Image (cartoon, rainbow, N blue to C red; front, side):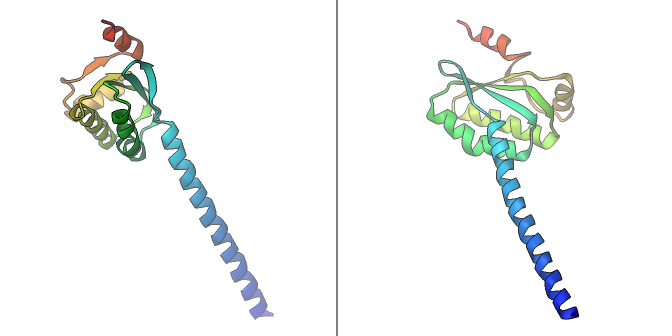
Length: 151
């Protein structure tokens, strides 16, 4: 009887482990999809797109931008990208650093990054950690940035 209970217990444990493993795989796929949809590229004018950063920006978001969004920007011959931070509710210094590296990467590709939607808490973090923002055009919101682009 003990051997039967032991075999039954092991079968239950194995089933639970298998179920948890499949759930973890599904969750990871969902996390990757959430990152993709939270970094959309939105055309607003000819050669001008907005990259609204939404939610809690993580390393996964910035990796998605490096690996998928920047190549798409280059393929579409976009000349200006508005990086809009107004939908961001949490960042850390490492992610801020990566965001500025993204802006620098865009500049190296001949694409002008414009920064919008920076709240006071983000602004103080940027200044506190000594990030150089002098080379970027910065506006309160996307509307002001688009007005500034009118020729």
